[in-house]
Image (cartoon, helix red, strand yellow):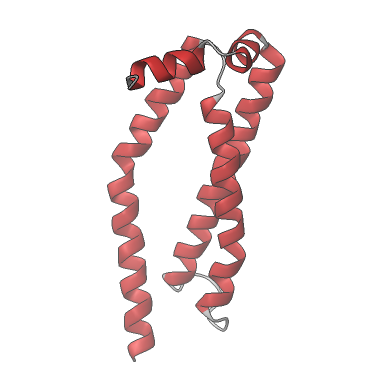
Length: 127
């Protein structure tokens, strides 16, 4: 069974990876799509969390608020994943890796804020 290193090496040396790596326009386009995808994802999570925290319209059920943002979250995940895996140069990939490390470190804080907003919403419903 081939190792993961061999698997990723085959992907890195594939025709599609080489084409993307060698094309500034294609790399820029995919990076732009990645940015749009992350914007959709983060924006929809912020809107959902603000709704749960009671910072948005209070006369709408939470199901309506989160339904609208769910589609944007899924689209953001799909689009951002496409841009991430086909980033061009090694320097640009290293920048993305650094960014993902920072986001990974911030994730526990975001989860705590999301949990707190959910508890606040649940307590509000219990009253």
